[in-house]
Image (tube, rainbow, N blue to C red):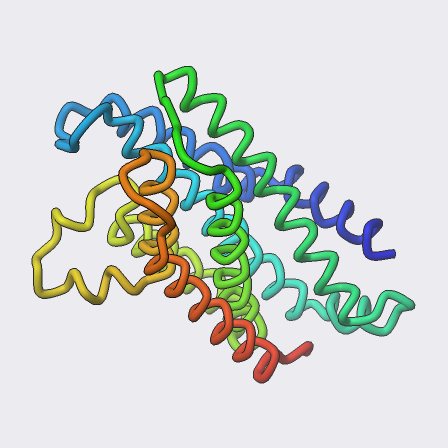
Length: 237
């Protein structure tokens, strides 16, 4: 039952034009555009800087923005309540949603990596470390998305999720380095989950550092707090 529901969730995402725009088209456009942008002043090939940030953005778009909006409207129209009353339990439904998020993220990462390689990207580092960071980032963003969807009205979730997406895209080091912002706000930006995920994945794939302990701890903290808050305050109707 969980696998069947997960399949339905994946198909619904891939058939939704707005979701497809959010999960694939925008990241691809950002990857291509900023890899070729002459104004982006970074050390080394621009694609080596941009590609890890866009991979982090893909996790944000699916685990947080897309999931928050879809779950918010399912809650509004009573879909969650009805599904929770079926033989598929509420725990099973959450597992199915999590599995669907992971499947969509894998598809995103495969497509984005192929595009980045075509642009000349040369990744390094341990892929298992990247996988760990992606899992922690997924947990953190999923918790935040479910918290928003389970406590706010659907329209407020729609507006809030898109606003947060844009703010984190602009401020989280995805396509612009955090060093480009004033020093007074850098400490705040560095504890954002998107910044931790972006910096952690970038440090691994560029081979400039060892295991990203700081990024891992930030993501782990966000994941624990967000999932605990979602479990405590999520309302099914």
